[in-house]
Length: 231
Length: 305
Image (tube, rainbow over all chains, first blue to last red; front, side, top):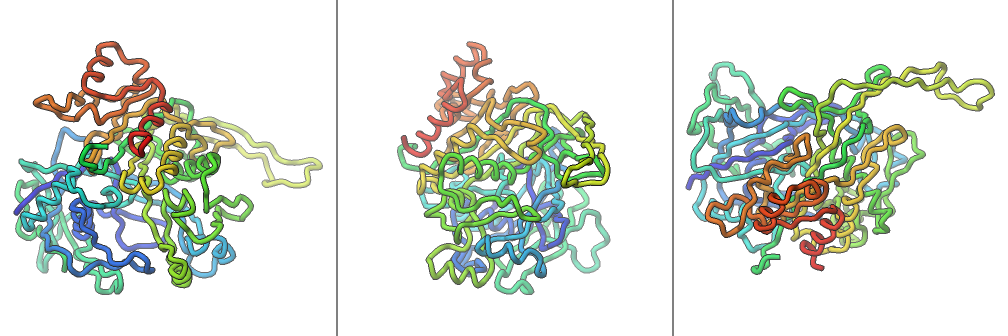
C-alpha cells in the first residue's frame, strides 16, 4: 500500500554525526529518522532495553520503503536555515572541568557555547510503501485512534521542535525528491549525506549515502527515491 | 477525558505581553551585545531558546516547592550545575518532567544497581519563543564606569562603551504534553502548568532587562491527535489568532477543528466582541478572561480534578 504524508514544523533540525562548536543540519531528515517517526506514529517500540549506556534497535521491525521530498507550496512561507548561538551541555574532550564531573552524577558537566543550524518552516512530503496493516496503523496513530500505551509526541529532529501538522495527502503537490547519488551521476546542487540505517552498537556499520534533490519538481517520486528500511 | 479513555495530548501557544526585550544575548561583536534572531519571510525576529524557557520553569518549580535534583552553581568559573544524586524520575519533579542523560559507563552501572534508568526523554516539549514584531535595528548605548580610586577590585582597566540590541515585542512559544506520560505524576505536571502561568526569569540579562514570560493570551487544544493540527505560531502582531476562524461545532457537516477541544484565554478573550464570543461558545470552545484560571481548569481536565 502507498501513503503520502505532508509534515510541517515551524522549526526543525536534523543533525548528522558531528562534534565541535558548529552543529549543522541536513536539509531534510534521513530515511532512518523518518523510519523512526513512522514507527512512533504507529505506536511501535523500536528500542530494546533502555537501561544500558547505548539504546539498541530491535531486529524484528517491519519493512517500509520511504521516499522524502520537499514540496512546492507557493502560498506557504519559504523554508530557510537560521543559525543560533547557545550554551550546550556536553562531556568535554580531555580533562577540562573534571572537578565538575563529580557534582553532576554522570550527567554532562561542561557547558560551552556552540552555533546551531535550525530549519525554519520545514515542509516535507514523505512517501510510505508498506503492508496495508502498517499504513493503516500509522494513520490511526496519527488520529489518536490506537488505544495502546505510547510515550511522547513526534518531533522534528530536536525533541523541542514538534510538528504543527502531519496529514495524509490525497493529491500530491509538485515535489523535489531526494535520490541517492549513484556512480556516474552528473554533479548536482544540494547534495547531502543522509543516514539510511543506524547501528548504535557499532557506528562503522551505520549506513550513510549521498543524496541529491531531483532537478525538477515532479508529482511522483522516481523509483530511485525509495529507500528500503530496515537494512 | 473522552469516554473510551483515549489518551489526550495538550498543545498550547502562549503569548507574552509586549515590552522592550534585550534579555537573551547569545554572542557579542566587539562591545555590541547581539540579540539572537532568525529570518522569516525577509524580516528578522528575535528568538529565545526552549532551553532557556525550560531552565526558567525548572527554577520556578523550585520556588513552588517541588522536589528538584538539579540546581545551578553560581560560583564556578564557568556555567555549572549540580545534582544532589543520580537522576531519579520517581523522586524529583525536574528529572521526571525534563528528562536527563547519563552516558558515563561507570555511572550507568551504578544507576542500574539502584534500578534507575540512565536516560529519560523530556515529557515537557517546548519550542522556541519567537518575537511577534520584527527586529527594527534598535540599540541602546551605555557606559560602564571604570572601577577606580580606592576600590579594592576592578574588572577592566578602562571605562567601557556598551552597545546593546533591544527589540520592543511580545513573544509567542508553543509547548506540548502527552497525557499518557503525565498521569504518572499529575501533581508535578499541575505545578508545571502553574509555573508556565506565572513564568519569569527566562534567559539572561535580567540585571538589565526585566521581561516577564507570563501569558497575556493562550490558545490550547486537548486532543487525541498526535499533532496540534493548526499553526502553533498563530498569533499575529496585533495579538489576534486568525486560525480561530477554523473552529466550529464538532457535529457540523464540514467541521474543520472541533471547538470543544480548544481552550482560549487572556487578553484576546477580554477584547473579543460579543458576536465572536457567541460563535466560539456555540462551537463549544472553553473561554477564560484570565489565563491563570484557564491553566487551573485545563489541569483539572487533563490530569483529573
